[in-house]
Image 1 (cartoon, helix red, strand yellow):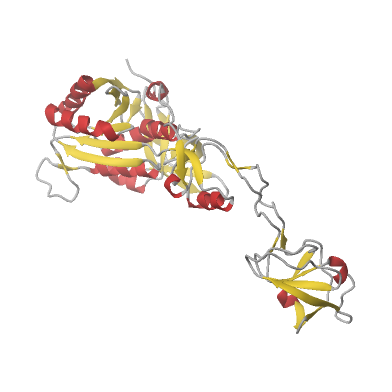
Image 2: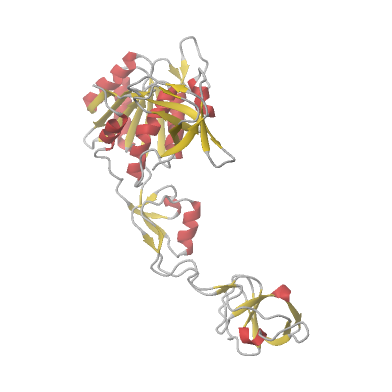
Length: 406
């Protein structure tokens, strides 16, 4: 009996929880997801500062200023970035400030340096200035206690800068999942090695490892591994100690599937299911060892392995990493070319999105005979529902952009 795509994904995700969080230094947390909302202990900025180089003034002192009768103010102090202001801005006075300088008490506006005539300790202003001009008030970005990043946010360089600006040096985050990628098959050789007749380069191993890394997880690539139960069992047992998730891509032969299934059931439990999809109908899932490490097996053909990763492995990694949205996100697009499909299977077709000048997103399916070439050109998967046998240009369809989640 075949499973639907949703039924298999639900079965795979059942019992998958976010990895336990712990405190991490900011740089160590890059690529991780927050386990809780982060609130700022301070306002940002924590003090009112100058938004340009110029002079801190009171608005009333400039109210009647004109080219004919400029306002003249005495410069009583200068504040550099990092300095604490020593003198307040009082009537008839100004304080010189630099970009980012803390503003002295009494400041109502900052007038840019190139808009005044400076002569010794005096400045002449020939136009009024509005209240708050060229000032960056304290707390303009957020107040103390505000949530600056929500639970589930993935930490990147920009967010590290935000947290550091808020005076936060450590965060409570889920670690990046450690994913072991194993490829099995006597016909597989390391990319770059000579290809003898009947041999195939292990494109799956490097492709799947790169996909894992693109999701922010840690990839450990192992293989190619010979299609031998004893060898595969030793490799699997060795890798279990460092894996949160194991992904196995079998060779194209039936014996590769048999080897994986036999060994996995000695170390834990695994089943191979037929899923109503193409490519990638054969999908395996199980758990290994006393810790119940999840293990997924993917078909050997690169297009099928890629589709299977996007459909099933990606959601598991996102769940482990603490993401709220884990399933592929569908977007609507207008079809540019006709498509035929077998009823009873959901078809995933590598495709290219084509934004239109009219604001309508369109999608062009790729029909090359070389699956790997299609993947290299594609930026999304066109989804043909199970009971649809053909689509025509102009039909509105679902597409999954690579690497996205709802």
